[in-house]
Length: 278
Picture 1 (cartoon, one colour):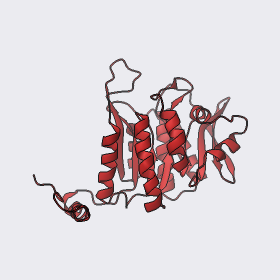
Picture 2 (spheres, rainbow, N blue to C red):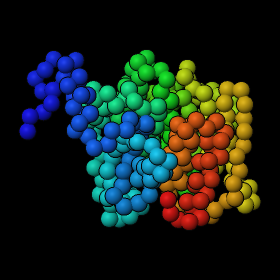
Picture 3 (cartoon, rainbow, N blue to C red):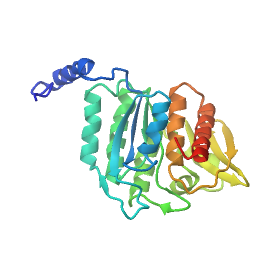
């Protein structure tokens, strides 16, 4: 089968492929969000947790996997295929050429399989900051949690801290990740604000405090702080952070305020943990 745009100069090839989309693709609604993260065949973590939430909210999502796993690594029977950084760079470039990045409002990142992947995405986001300054960049700096410790590959935390965190509009670390990414523990508000780069507007620290039967998320902007509390659900289920980030992104895309979107995200997680379903 001949490929549309093959053999043409770059700008003509891009125009031909974009035009081909108008009659070759079944779904013609514009893309809303691009997410980059892990995907599992079985399980509710990473993009496999985020996509049901985003789809239920009516968003058209472009999902770019950093790694594909048969199941969570907690299982002995788990096989994983991480994508190399070159494939990730090429895939993102393809989406740009097809005109899809011109449509989206948000780029959200989650789990990375290597530091090289982080650097590739950060390099691209620096270009996006110049070409598409209106796009919101939400970084969930996936590193680990208190019950399991760090579960990402060596070097990813440093790469996130150095390359990706400074490019974010908003950050969504859990309390473990927040403490891991920073050296200042005495003043979380000042610490969060110090994490914000040139384009940074807010940090939401999920599960920042657990007291009795209540769990609290801390929302920090450059000039305000807000706490959102919900009843604590004691559970060993994984993926709550992925669900939270997805619901937060959906809320912001749908023009909620940050506090309302965070409240919506917390309620979505609570409902999912209570029902054990998305």
